[in-house]
Length: 440
Image (cartoon, rainbow, N blue to C red):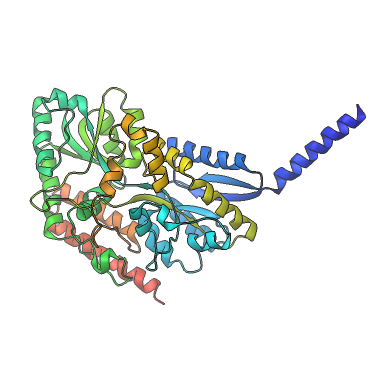
């Protein structure tokens, strides 16, 4: 009996020692709600797969709040090992000299497999430097798509299996929906910045800024006040006044989701990463999925949409054991089965070609019609300088400016040209401030 107790005690002590010896890796992220639960699950499964490292996910609020918290923490030398930063924070992170441990270098230093060709091309391009090196690990990459209420379409006398392809059709469908009483509003949109300005410009092959939308350096200037963007903002104002369009609010436009789920608006345009939330909330009606609309008098074949979502950045200031654990975790995250599960659960893009192929072999896309809309849209054609994405410093603040100017437009304080001219002028001041602060 005494020997048995001793053996049990010894085993318990060894277990405790092993547990204590696990190197803790803090991961700050901006995934709330169901997405946050999935992040916790991913970390837990990695932790269960080995005993040397323990990833600890910490929710830090919205994307801008998470980025701000990470910058403040780094200055105070209290930074996490990993921080999730949204796509428009890429320019800011790249300019944070000394703060970032580039992912391509980390994986090489730790001897972990890391092939840039394994990732989807649009994802690689957005997060690479001019030499083609990936600076942060793609995690939750998304692109905006159209969601529509099939039941409302049917009530309005529209074919529920046919979504509007062009903005002219969006207008025509919305008029039928509203006049028939099938819904109070034709369409709404989240992210006026990302969806109706940035992606809109990319789809129509219109420049958003000079120097290849900022990819060419800090001296870039905004140019998204061209005639095509002015035409679209003017139409959004007109459609609002006619009762066809309802504004979902600034930043992510939370009201857009509410108006769609309540069936007040028949169509919404939002992130593909919201697919799980849309399906979970649209209990009383059938949802259709389609690419974003375009003006066929501007472009006959729309370009690819651009990326959204976020990547995982590694911050300097940690010990060797921590970085070895981060590299192991990133290898785990890149596994086809892990990525396919995340993509299929959330609606975010499968960031690797292998994860996409796995989904195909599983029959996922056949069983879930519309689940590959985002992939086909972002992989469409060959990206141009206008459609490969944006890279501007201080861009979080510029999005706030765009929201303010759009609200001024809707309130009748400015016309579309005045609002966009002002957004560009104010934005260029932010770019010059960023350039000055980050000059060599």
